[in-house]
Image (cartoon, rainbow, N blue to C red):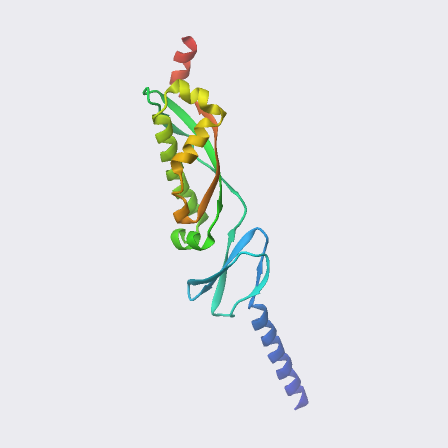
Length: 184
């Protein structure tokens, strides 16, 4: 009879250990922890360390806190003097408000990159379409990047995203235009 009580006691202690361990949330320095209760966000843990959740009722998702790089695909843009150029660029961004990010983009990094792609492309197209080709070529020293960021403004705040930098890797003429330019 005593061995049955010991086995039962060991089983209960083991069960308590499992339940207690499932209630611990470890948040790293480079991430946010979103504690969800029945699918809704209960609270956000932004400080690194150990916190607790209610086992089996609350779940935890993580979002990156560090600066993220997104390489936009090269695209054609048309200048104000109706000349086509190819723009290849990238952006540096981060999640500034994890609660808004989770609510508007469902905690999806790829969803955020899709929104960033559209917003940054439209802004780039608007800035370059109001500039002549000569000014676009001479504006490579950061003026064009600053104009694109200014054109975006604070439209990313609604998604909980902060745009850190926009840079152009390559701003070039299409292949069929290069030969004509070099001949001139």
